[in-house]
Amino acid sequence: MNSKPYIFELAIPTADGEFLALYSERGLCGLRFPSDTRRPKRQTDNSQLPTHIRRWYDLTAKALARALAGQPPEDLPPLDFSSGTDFQQQVWQALSLICCGQTQSYGQVASAIGNPKALRAVGGACGANPIPVLVPCHRVLAAHHRLGGFSGGLHWKRTLLMREGIGQIGELGDK
DNA sequence: TAAGTGCGTCGTT
DNA sequence: AACGACGCACTTA
Image (cartoon, rainbow, N blue to C red; front, side, top):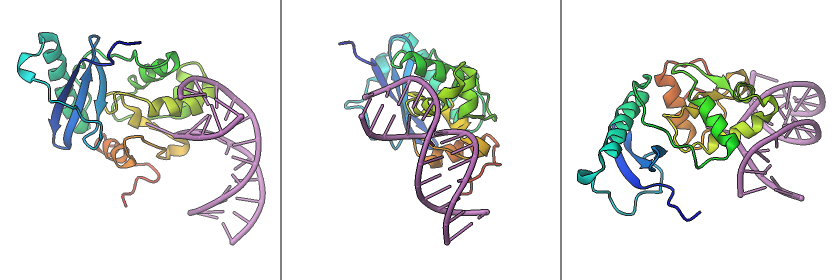
């Protein structure tokens, strides 16, 4: 209860702005969009990182760059889902199985974890996903290929899907 | 077509 | 007990 949720906060510059990666002793436990107001209080000294953290950071940066380009990651750092409830961890696990360029409905995800009636709760778990983009909650759509919601801002959901080559979505037209 | 209402359902707070 | 990144049936314009 008194343990810190993460140990290192490292900025990841990308063509879309500066993301923030959070690491626990178990792996990557959070990823924040450039627009996220929760910024690190103090910049971490990147020069003296433990080697395993640096390796995770390099993997994260490379995977993020590929993901933002609409390509599947080659390697991912270990993902630490321990902040979530059992249900949330099941959902996040299921999300990570959705391949680049593919989508699933909230109902399909619910069925995938053996709880087909919990489709609405799946939406809640997606919204609580601590590692967006790399844990592809943007690939979960509402029924009939409607866009649904996105906690990071719907423009991100649209953008990520389009970069993966998914354009046949209602409401996808930019305004 | 588009927009609005109501209800079932379930995990989270 | 109330609230959602849902889904479906149904009404109304």
